[in-house]
Amino acid sequence: DFTWRLWANPKSGAGSVTVRNLITSADISADHLTITFHLTRAFASFVSLWVDGIQAPLPAHHFSRVAPEAISKLPDNLNPKVTSGPFMMAESIPGEHYTLVRNPRYYRASEGLPYLDKVIFRNINKDTILKDLQAGTIDSTGLDVSQVQEARRLTHYTLVTSPTSSSFEAMYFNFHNQVLATHLEVRQAMAKAIDHPALLNEAALGFASLLCTDHPSALHPGYEAQPPCPEFNPAAANKLLDDNGWAKGTDGVRTRGGERLEFEYATTANNPWRLATEAVVQRNFSAIGIKLDIQNYPAPMFFGSLLPGGKASPPTGAISGRYDIAEFNTGFGYDPDDAFLLACDQFPPTGFNIDFYCNQTLDALYHQEQATADPGARQQIFVQIHQIYLTEFPFIVLYSLNDFSIVRNGTHNYQPGPFGAGETINIWEWWC
Figure 1 (tube, helix red, strand yellow):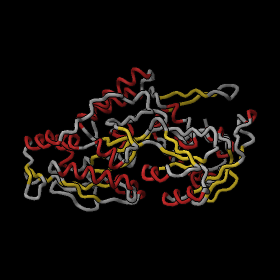
Figure 2 (cartoon, rainbow, N blue to C red):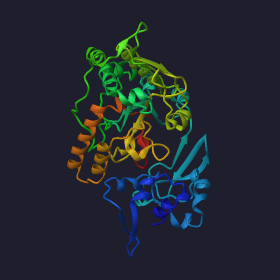
Figure 3 (spheres, rainbow, N blue to C red):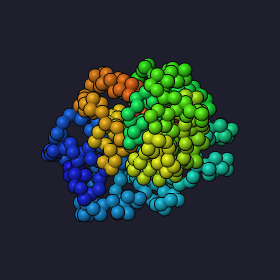
Figure 4 (tube, one colour):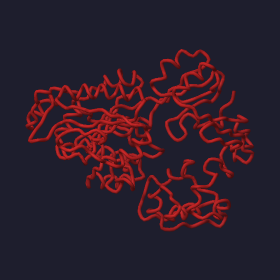
């Protein structure tokens, strides 16, 4: 009861606008073991907002003495004094490491859990991971696709692949770009021009799955096994553009009435598989008369200012420092609700609809799936949502990367999952 009222206070700086807008009141049972929420409307995703540590209820006895605006600045954010999980913080050195020890008050302590006495989380960059694995100073870690081949050579570790994924790599169109926003045939031609098998082999090195909707294999409902994916057909893409009056110039780039099919393409810097993805897409688009000017950015700048800023190139062609097409990975939590992607009320700074795309029919479907608890009925609504994605193409899904992690031989019960903490999702059960 304390937490939702705190979130509803604008001074708290809480990011959960959904909760703030949905809850009208709450009833607490006499034994204080049950809470009943009253919402403004049915919302199937509601429970998922409470099950992860990021948004879990806060202890009132500890935080109620603090002004709402001061909570986000407390040392508890990096060194919590109250915890209900299997471990508790023993040492917190931000940017270097965090040492956790067994929590004697853990509700499953009587079962002997957690089995480990201590866990140390180290902050290291991607380039250091392989060196530390070779030196044997790491017990487990997550990996990206560019590290898998080298990791396979390590004899004292076991490479683990999650059987399903909860994320997807996609290219998003900035609808502030007049050409992309008003010419559906251009977006359709792009979808027909992308060689997805080449992306899997050349960019993802074979460590990804084909996917053309936004719901990867771990999402049920959501995942659609056989959606109507666009066919790789450069000839059809060229004909579509020809039929709509887009003519190739002497430089091979198509123009029409002063508009030019040249766009700024951006993603995060220093990611080998994304550089390889850009190369494939750039080659595919060049074959149909579309030019991509690639400029990548450090992740904080890319996500923090470039995408929310939404500044697009003019119809006459690409301008450096802007973005027309952005590539990045999007992941889901425990619930398949995907309204955060393109809902009309999710434009920055309220949300992260960095397409700046608004479709009232799509919005109505988002509200329907959010109000539907039955998985089968909800799946049918997602199929309708996917149909809009695969005809209007506000974004194009490129692939779904496999989730890789690696663990020292002799570690038991190591079972990474696609959601939540991912690699350490069941860390209280590990033992060695």
